[in-house]
Every structure is written in structure tokens, then in C-alpha cells.
Amino acid sequence: MELTELPLIVTVAWIALPFFVGFSIYLLPQFDRILALSVALISVIYASLLFIVRSPQTLELIDNFGVMLIADPLSGFFILTNALVTLAVLIYCWRSEKTAFFFTQIILLHGSVNAAFLCADFISLYVALEVISIASFLLMTYSRSSRSIWVGLRYLFVSNTAMLFYLVGVALVYQATHSFRFQGLSAAPPEAITLIFLGLLVKGGIFVSGLWLPQTHAEAETPVSAMLSGVVVKTSVLALVRCALLVPEVEPIVRLAGVGTALLGVVFIMFETDSKRLLAFSTMSQLGFILAAPPVAGFYALTHGLVKAALFLVAGSLPSRNFKELNQQPIARSLWLMGAIAAFSISGLPLLAGFGAKTLTMKALLPWQVIAMNIAATGTAIAFAKFIFLPHSNAIKAPEKVKLLWLPITILIGGLFVTNLFYPDAYSLGNIAKAIGTTLLGWLLYLGIIKKLSFKFSRIPEQLEHLIGVMSLSAIGLFLLAMYVNSFEGVG
Image (cartoon, rainbow, N blue to C red):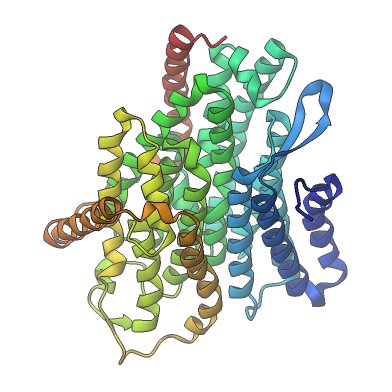
């Protein structure tokens, strides 16, 4: 019998399961790993069902207020990303000394991220994002070091400030439409678009509003960094993508934010010498690729999440975070291979999912985006050449912790090979030639110019007081864009 739609009870049970299991871990701490792993596996199954069914499923929670959830193939891509990254992180931590508290927070974070991926209204999204913030903070501060606590509090302060703006914007949408649905933006005043988008841009780590992200993701423990960069920041990104798809009038704002973010990120990553900060800035840039082409955002988000989680796990096993030091001594070839394959994918080389995702994204760009996004693609190849051209040798013995990497990396990189089969149409001679040419150009620029330069950007803009100031500047820019859209597209 052909499955045409998922029973409503399946979606409701799946949303509730992580929270039930998360709190149950406290009662059964001896089963913490097994229970957490089971939830991630069930999410893989649920996401797969969304691709099989394909027809969107709408769950109206409070119909009079427009509070609703949507389960469709778009959310399926993001949910599958969350499931595979969580699965890899849990396996990575399996033999560690992490307590039941850690696994509880991982699975609560997993559940709240899943819920956010289904949200189609501003108020339920707000609730999901706030739960995500709490779980993320507890994971960031798990080590209880002074540094981790400060970084966690900094994250909470920036996040909560952004969400205050967001809530005011939501109130303006409700005042104008008597509904919290994303579609309400079409009748909302420019101030509402400005405040809501400001909150989502900050939470998602997008453009200058996301300069909090590098320090936060770089200072977190390796598995937490993988979760934050692989899936957590995408909750706000999917909301922006849905707004662009449901309200065509605001799509230009989302696309412009994507282009700006992609370019800003590559400027930083080309000159960054710290591996974890490079990966964090790269997350900013890659989120720009997702936003630049909303119609194909899901597949790009999946490939980026798998790559970024893999690279953060690999970076955590390198003998140093500084590329200058890493270039002075070979690393174990097995460790290099793990990082190189992920770097090949994010650079857009064929046979890995990153190629199909980047090709589809470039095909979905508007004419005014093409030059900028091709520059960003070349910059990505330059940056990840730093991983690809690390010296390596079979004679070097891999650290003991590398043994923990094989299974989680196999899941993540295996996902890149399997999902590469999703879009065979990308494999035209022209697309293959362009991808290889862009990557080779990036490698030549890295080896010939970038590797020889010694340049570092100031970290002053990442300080807390400047992050808050940037929010004001971002709000002004968003308001001007919203006014422009209001004048020429008829919003409001």
C-alpha cells in the first residue's frame, strides 16, 4: 500500500519523544547512551518518511492564532541533518566519561532543534529557539571552566537581546494580521520585518550580526562545536528560508543576506590560522549559500551539516589548532584522509554531495548573485585547501583518540557519498569542469599567495559591546531594505 501521508499521531509522538527520553535518562542513567542513540535513529526514520510521503503535513496547534507546524521534504533535509550529526556525536562520545547530564542535554537539544524545523509560525518558533538556547548554554558550559562559562553567558546575552527585538516584531505581525503565521509578513509593516529578521539573523550567525559565532563555536568542546555548527544555527536559517518561500516579497532580503554572509565569511576564513575558528567562520559563509538560493536550501543544508560536523571532530584530534604549526609536522595519514574527504565535499568536487549541492545552488541564483557567489565558492576552495595540503605520513602513528573517530566519521562521510546520488542530473560535463576548475583555482591561489601571507583580522568586532552595537547597525540596514521592498513590492 502506498503511503500518501503520515498519521498525525506519528508526528506528535516523534516531537515529544526526545523530551520524554531526555528526562527519563535521569531515572535510568545506566542506559543514557542507548536511549539517546535510539532517539537519533528514530529521527533518521522519520526524516526518511518525509521524503517518501513528500506531501506536506500541517499540524494546527491553535488555529485561531495561526500557530502551526509543517512537516515536508524541506524540513526533512534539516531533520535528517540533525539526526545524522547527533548520531555521529553520540557515537564519538560513547567511550568518553560524559555523564548522563551531558547526554540528556544532547537529546533535549536534538528534540528542540527538530521542533524548530517544523515551525511555521513565529510564536512556536520563539519557544523552540529559547529551549535550544538553554540546552546549548548547558552544553557549552559542561566543563565548568571560567572560560566556557563566560563564552556561554556571552552567547545567552546576545541571543536573548536578539529575541527581544524578535518578539516586538512578532507582536507587530499579530497586530496587523491577528495571526502568528509566517505568511503574516506579507501584510506586516516594515518595522516588523526588520525586528523579526534581526532576531533570526543574530540567532543564525548571519552576516555581521553573526560575529558572536566564531568565538562561541571555537571555544566549545569538540562534540558541542559539531552540534552547534552542524545543526543548531540552521534553525533560524530554515525559518528565513520558509519566509522567503511563503512570502515572495521578502525573498530579496533573504537572498541579499545570503550573498553578504557568503562573502563576509570567506574573507575571514582565507586568512584564519586557527582551525576551529576557520570552521566557525566557514559556517557563516556556508549559511550564506543556503540563504542565497531558498528553493534548494534543504539539500545544501544537509551536505554542509555533515561536512562541518566531520571537520570539527577531525579538528579536535589534530595535534594543534594552528595551521602554521600543523604545516611544520606531518600528521597521521588516516586522520588527514578524514579531513581531506570532507574538505573535498565542501569545496564542491564531484562524487561527494557537496558537488550536487553547490551545482544546484548556482543554478538557482538570480543574475545579480552569480558573480559574488562564484567568488565565495573560490574562497571556500582556498580556505579548505588548508586541510587538504596538510603534510601527512603513514609513518606517523595516529593518536589514541583517533580510534573514536572512525565510526562517526564513516556515518558523516558515508552520508556525503549516499546523498550524492540524490541529484544525478548535476553530473553534466559543464558542471564537472566548472567545479574542478573553481577548486583548482582556489588551490593555486592558496599555494601561490594565501599560504605565504601573514595577516590577521582584529578580534575587536567580536567583543560583546561591539556585538550589541552591530545589532543596531543591522537593524537600520534591514529597515531600509524593508522600506525598499515595501515601496516596490507592495509589502504592508
